[in-house]
Amino acid sequence: MRIFNRNLRLQDVTIMYFTALAALMVILVASYQAPTNAINVSSLKSNASSPLPPLPMPFRVPLDPRGELQLSWNISYTNLEIYMELRVAKLRYGVVLGMSDRGELTNADLVVLWDSGTKSYFGDAWSDSEGRVSLDSQQDYELLEAKQKPDGFHLLFKRPFSTCDPRDYLIEEGTVHIIYGLLDQPLASLEQLNLSRIHTGVQRVLMLRPDTPSPTLPPDVQTLDVVAPNVIIPNQETTYWCFIQKLPENMPKNHIVMYESVITPGNEAIVHHIEVFECSPDIRQVPDYSGSCDDKMKPGKLNFCRHVLAAWAMGAEAFYYPPDAGLPMGGKGSSRFLRLEVHYHNPLLISGRQDSSGIRLHYTPSLRRYDAGIMELGLVYTPVMAIPPKQHTFYLSGYCTSKCTQTALPPGGINIFASQLHTHLAGRGVRTVLVRGRKELEVVQEDQHFSTHYQTIRVLRKMVNVLPGDVLITKCTYNTEDRSKPTVGGFGIMEEMCVNYIHYYPRTQLELCKSHVDPGYLQKYFNLINRFHGNDQCVCGEVSVTEQYSQLQWDVFTAKVLDSLYNTVPMSMHCNQSTARLFPGVWDKQSVPVVTDILEKPHYPCEGGAPPTSQPSTAPV
Image (cartoon, rainbow, N blue to C red; front, side, top):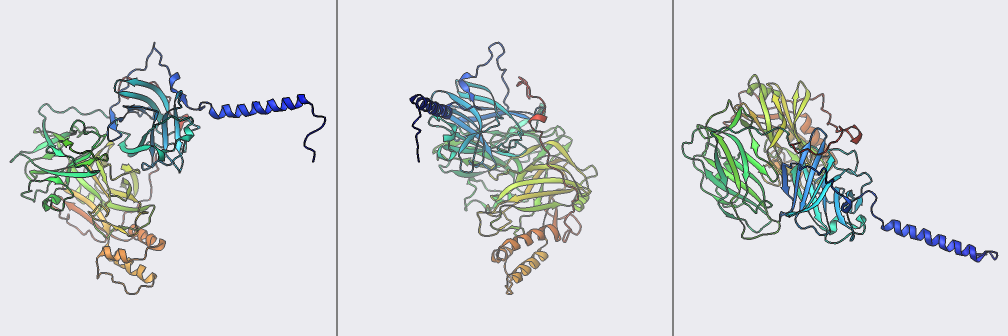
């Protein structure tokens, strides 16, 4: 075969050579040129005649254990946008901020500032299933300012709640898992970045907050600090510290109208969350204690201090009661003893750090019109409710039935203004919905990115009125893919709960409105499954329910039949008064409430349908 044409002239060969060389140069230049979608930070210039006005950032949280990264933000519900400011104390070659379903580094929505060696770039990016980072073709983060200040480098940017980009995270009510990382070397191309190869971390926040103004406190308000007694924080990653504090003897009835955190300066990145519990009034004396909540030698009476008075988590602001309600403290029928619980998260194993963090209660002797109350919704803490092993998604629902609300609520009903969701380690989501006339009327509280490591009282954006005859359904989502045995209900951290502590007024005698499957029908389930798998030697009723669950042969059929059982067979209701006794009536073998109309999940408009954006305002957004 002839490769060259004898008649091919030198001029033709020269032209071909230089054409090929030019094409190669174009390819090489294109491969090293600046990213087309990213912003060259050095070219971002503020308009001196009309500089960007200062934007208030009412919400903030330290991201890393040292507090060198801080995220602040503000919310525009009018424009469905969120403004964020990231402060980096010591910026080297760049920073990564992102959001993902549960804090994973994979399949995350990212915003990245990186240094190529000669210039700095800012862009909307995403990570794949291996943690490799790519610039997003749709840039939804808008950079407003990048500036070095005395306390570090500040990035100010914004993005819509919903971008309609499948690679972007939908910012909605509930927990948001923030991931962060620092770059320690330049990147010629963003595609060189793999999140698994840099130092990263996770922080959890409530990104969307109510936009209502804080009520004014009364002039005669007093304060009580429930704080740790100068504790030496243990040099271990996780510590739950308990402390018993006494109220003044013969303290008259007061109303708590607000509470806030008191964090020892320098410990803002270590104090993870705090709770204050009131002990049972039936316990006359609770011994003094200051030590680990997990210490097996701690006084047993601490287990009777479970009535939540206050809860705070990192990033939460002060909690205000509605103007016409307050939480009773002191007086007849209350306890003198409070239990403080502080969660220290110390991954750097810092030793010798002292702490006196806690909660400051603001209370008034001028009683408001209504006593506020706290009611438990969901499932009873019992092993009859269980989650099969190896489940990606499994649901359990607890009911507060129409019969119970008809029996226990006043004619005008109650008004729910806040709630605290609660599960243990397998919990992934919690949703409480109000049902009236078999129709879902409104969602009380929902968090589909729930984490047991981030539990705080959340003020509702809109108060929910519950009338006699209404139904409240609390549905929890679980994942047990990493477990080989069934997970039963109970108090242990490896057991499970499904609870919503609702804060409401006016206070009633109804303190607990929860359910569980009827035990008799559960025994029929054990008998059926054992026979199906050829085991006629059923020990149903002879051993504990926990052991019966463990002895089952778990497969798809066993799990699906259990799910069907929970949703169809009769249940036992716990419609309990504050004395822990049931309200009068028959509460066993109650039918599962029927719901015919389900609320549709609200949809945010896409970029084209969103209200027009505006410049950040100097007033609260």
